[in-house]
Length: 173
Image (tube, rainbow, N blue to C red; front, side, top):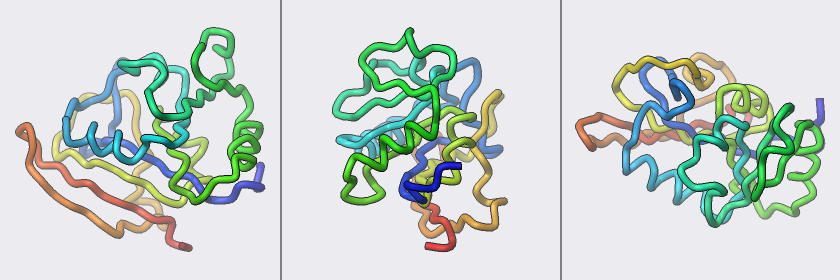
């Protein structure tokens, strides 16, 4: 395991009541307030995603961001993004970017990418939607992980959904 970067990345996701994030390579929810929050947090930052997430983007690459794709099989299929087939090389690249702070890198999905980079993250921005949908991909349930602590939650109702913008920190921070 590469340890040169430490825990200096962020996770960002929109989840349902079961921490589902997607089905058939599509997001479970299309909530304007969540999209605006995603844009605000990730603009002018590096975003790390898997191949399926890359393919699901409405615009490729996402503008005003450094798009980084982690893919073992599709390294030649991707244009307009940095592509890595080895996560240790990706972490070394990130650590060499002279980042100002940990807010410069966001892991944006999908499930395997979240699971792979969770040990390198210290913050998570989760939009919780009080609904349950059919999902074939999930985000790690931070409420069940002892080393993650919910520190902030702002609730609102929008587009017929009760949602909460939640911030988690790795508890050793």
